[in-house]
Length: 178
Image 1 (tube, rainbow, N blue to C red):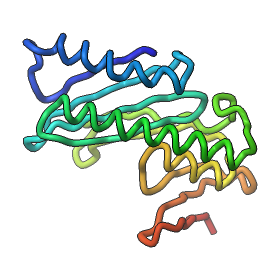
Image 2: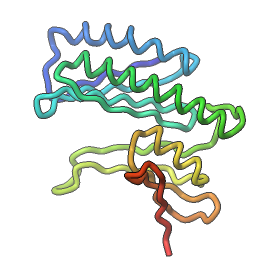
Image 3: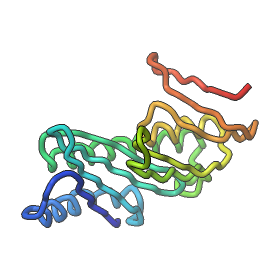
């Protein structure tokens, strides 16, 4: 596992090495889910008197992503790790059940998008993504992996851009062009 730790909005000069060592040790337990070949990005930001930990793991065409906030950087990182571990176990078993034991890492699902922050006056984040065709079930799975309420994808049956979203009642909706 390759862990990249990025801090934003606070000075971690004195205890940065401690933070790096502790997170490296704790996050190494994710190796068992990815056969030791995952790239983990941990971003810890200090915003509005809270530390926000964002963990992103691109793996096998999927992108696992969680966010957690706390009043302590260590707690935010640890809580995000626990949430990530639960998400990985849930989604891997769900994937295997849905696709009858298919190999999780070789399934052709869309690559995640790139993010660029602070690019314009009112636009604070810009995302681009690869348009690989996928079925609606695959888009739902990808949306849940990224911990978002919606997901933009190219429908594999119509080859048009669609948006899948999670409704307040827990069910899903889809937006298709006319």
